[in-house]
Structure formats: structure tokens, C-alpha cells
Length: 500
Length: 49
Image 1 (cartoon, rainbow over the protein chains, first blue to last red):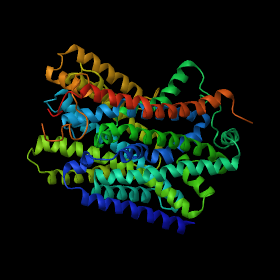
Image 2: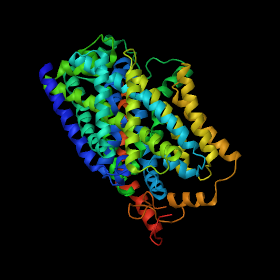
Image 3: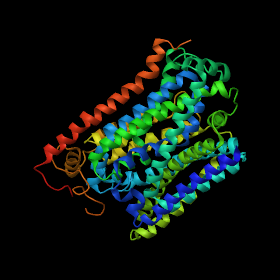
Image 4: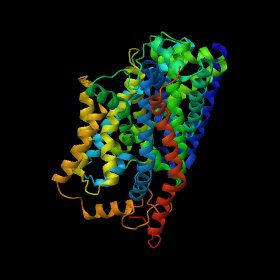
């Protein structure tokens, strides 16, 4: 089994690296590297936004959590699809149009221009937040890689982590945005096959959903009931905040929202949203069903992160196991490289070019990006420990980014009165709240919820307590949101980087 | 053994509802939003600052 799975695993990775080499030759400028030249097609944006979102969290973390939680894991699915829907239906078009108008190439770029941050605070704080929390969540991805490669191929955990880190590093160093987007499409397809195939095969053997859940309760000790045995009002609120609350993180994830900025025409986001939403609904619920099915086949697992690889080995032939494991590793690569791309661009373009070398050429910025990326990968590898749980570690990073950027991004697209002081306050409060919640292990409720709420309050209170934004900013807001009647949509009409 | 009615609703309700909303957005609401922007902006030109 190991031989055939190793062959298919290796073949898949060769294909991925082939796309990386293609991306290398297609990347000529920093805009190509960071935003794919703002010319990505709808199907690429639709699939790549979801694949870069989901990661190893989908194939490893979510089935493991569903295995442990039982039926109540269904609330995580509700949170995920609602958060994704908010992004596609309410955020994506405004984001594309507004960033096109401002000529922004990164999310931080956009936020700075939006509030006329002439002090550079947003880029400074945002870059710190991106590097800090992306490193945390990426270490969660590497934990997943270590556990998968251990379960299927027998490597030690740390060897698996090193292999995962090396794959991501080499791959992203080569490609940039173009390669990342196209491999995300391929990986999105493989991940979709995995989350449909495994639960279908599993439940065909079991016979019914209820039967699978009954066996799961015996195997994993998962609590029965739609709220997982939560009793009392506060416990129930905490439970729902921790499951549905994941959805609050969606608006603030720059590695996802930057995909909207990359599409060739904002009107094509409608089709991209159809592709993305169908994918996320099937993928999320497929992963949950996968965890539920596991109880009947591989009960009594101590390390729940190995639910998916063990289930695949139990149900599928070796060559198919190899492809699915490659799909999981691909999930890690697709998300990690997307995050590295955003974080390194933040440092190289927003900090290096702004504060260190204003005259830096595109080529030089490109190489600074690649150097920073290498440093972040090494940090994430060092942070990856076998005691870590994929689901929890990744959601910690998710919360930090979601609270730092989410409320601010929503306000920047929907609230004309937002000013730079409110933006500073929201970003800092969101980041610090989550960091403190994690550092002191406060618990009580998922850290994203207090981070999001406090940041939102800070944005509103500080903006209202300080001067209104300049008239030029207000006019710009009205132009970008369509309130003024000015046409700003489309690649030909919208401002492109450097034209302002 | 089968899931209770409440469990059926909690399990299948959200994904089915969201699929319907997504299709509705694609064929109607999102399209209308695009068209309304185009209509309201037809008389204007440019977008560059």
C-alpha cells in the first residue's frame, strides 16, 4: 500500500511544481507576483479563494473535530458557510471596485488609502498582525502535515513537518500569485473529491447517518444532541460562539479577500461566488460527514488529527490514499502559500519600500518578499509541536487576523464616516485582544468573538469622537460604492496601480 | 434508528437554504445589482482618480 500511495503522492506533487515553474516564468513584475496582474478569471478566483481558505483544516482539523464532537459539529458548518456567503455577497464586489479605484495591490494598501493613513500606522500594525497570526496558523498546517505523513508513510512527526515546510517554501518562492491561484484550483478539485468520496464510501457501508452517529458516540465518546450536551444558557452561548463564531473571521482574511481584488472584472464575481459557494457547502459538510463516518471504521483513535488518513487507509486502495493524502498536503500548501504571499508582501511592499528603500525596484521587492517568506516558514516549522491540535491552532491564527482586519474592512466598505483614528483603534484593539486571549489562555469563549466585538466598538467610538474624514475621502467612498453615480468598475475603467 | 425531525432540520436546512440563496444571487439579486450600477453610471465616464 505504501508503495502505490507514495507513487501517486509524488506524481501529484510533480504536477503542482510544474504549475509553480509556469508561474515563475509568468511572473515578471511585483503586481504579477502579488495580484496576478489583476486579470484572474472568475473560475480561478472562485475555486482558489475557497481552496486557500480551507487548507489542511478542512481535511484534517474539521473531520477530527466532527469525530470528537458528534452531531453538534454541524454548527461549525453553519458558521463556515454563512461567513463565506457574507464575503461573496457583501464584500467581494465592493472590495474589487474600491481597490481598483484606489489602485491598491494589497489589502493593507487598500486600507491605508481608504482612510488616508499618512502616518503608516495601518501598514505597520497590519504587517505585525499578519506575520504573527499567519505564522501561528501556518504552524497548525505543518502540524497537520506531520501527522498525515506519520500516519500514512511512517515518517516521524518532525520529518513530516520539515517536508511540509520545504514543499511550501520551495513552491511559493518559485511561483507567486499566478502559481498560487492555479494550483489552488487543482487542489480545490482534489480536496472536493476527498471530502465527497470518503464520507460517501463510509456511509454506504454504515447504512444511515443516524447509525454512523450512534457508532461514533460509542467510539469517540461524542456527546449526543444538537448542542453536544451543552446545558445552561451561558454554556450554550459559549458553544454557539465557538462554532458559529468561526464565521466572523471570514471578512478579515486578507489571503481570501485579496482574491476578489485579483479578478479581471468585478461583475465576474457573481459567477465566482456561485462556484465558490457550491464548493464550500459540499466541502464543509463532506468533511463533517467524514469525521462522523470514522467512528464505525477506526474507533478509539487517541490522536484525532489522524482520523482522515486512517479512515482513507481503511476504506480505499493504496493509490487513491496517495492522491487523497496529496490532496491534504495540497490543502496545506494552498493555504500556507497564500498566507505567506500576503504576509511577505505586507513586509516587503508596505514596510520595506515605504520605510527602508522608497526607490526599490520591482525586482528588488520581489526578492525581499522571497527572503521574508523563508524566515516565516522557518518560524512556523519551529512552532509546530506534536501536542498541537490542527483545528485549535489554525483557529487561533484565524481569530487574530479576523479581529484585526474584519471589522475594519467591513467599516471601510460600508461606513463613510470611518476615519484613520477609528481604523487605528479597531486594528490595534482587535489584534491585542486576541493576542492577550491566547497568551493568557483566557478561554470562556472563542477569542475571535471578543476581538471582533471590541474592535468594532473601538472603530465606531473613536471615529465618532474624532474629526470627520476629508471631503475627498467621502467622495471617493461614494464613487466606489456607487452612491455618486460614477462608474468605477471593470479593469479598463478602474484605476490600475500607479495611475493615480 | 433515524435522526429526529429537529436534527434533520438542523443538519440539512442550512446547506440547502444557502444553496438556494446562492442560486438566487446568481440568477437574480447579484445580476440586478450589477445592472443597477451599470444603469446609474452610464452617463459618467472614467474612474481614475
